[in-house]
Amino acid sequence: MKKWLPVVVACLLSACSSSGSDSKTYYQLPLAQAGAQSSASQNSHLLWVEQVSIPDYLAGNGVVYQTSDVQYVIATNNLWASPLDQQLRTTLVANLSNQLPGWVVASQPLGSDQDTLNVSVSGFHGRYDGRVIVSGEWLLKHQGQLIKRPFHIELKQPQDGYDAMVKTLAQAWSQEAAAMAQSINRLP
Image (cartoon, rainbow, N blue to C red; front, side, top):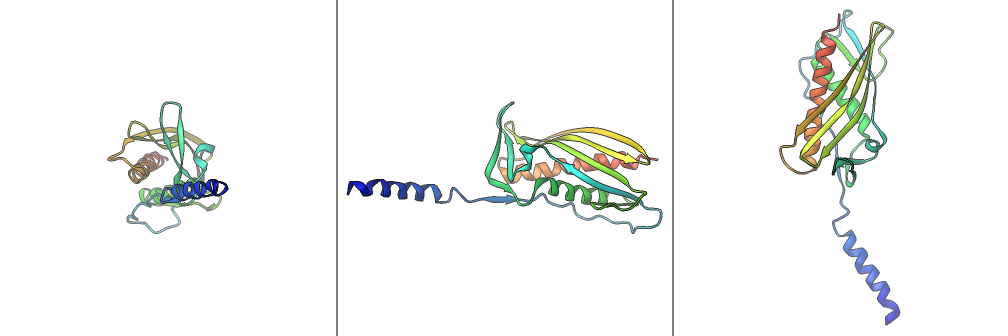
């Protein structure tokens, strides 16, 4: 009987550890609602969103949460439904398309007269004080000149939890897209 005791204990422990605690939740950033799109004409400006890059700590599947000024936790059960850099790029193209009338914005090259936008995201996470952080810089190549702008947005989450955190992160990313669009609209 004693030789079976470790097996029984191991089975009980594995049953306890797998009962509901391993359920995973997947998150996708919401896409902006399509506004009035102007049809492409020969006078359209072309913008290729070439790349949105993220650091290694954001490149995994887990949603990231900052627990102190120096510690970050990468969730194991709250995961991105698709790679975060792809989600950021897709939503950026959609947001810029909505906010730049007269522009054709795409994630594929558009031709020799296109402007090119590259974004480096350094922060895209929740924080211990109930805020989300979206930070980084973008670089636009426009008619042979380079325009570089840093960004840092902090927004308060309306409530606790990963759902609220992801929605607030999406809101901050949308705000940054609006700021990019304003800068691009001021170009000659």
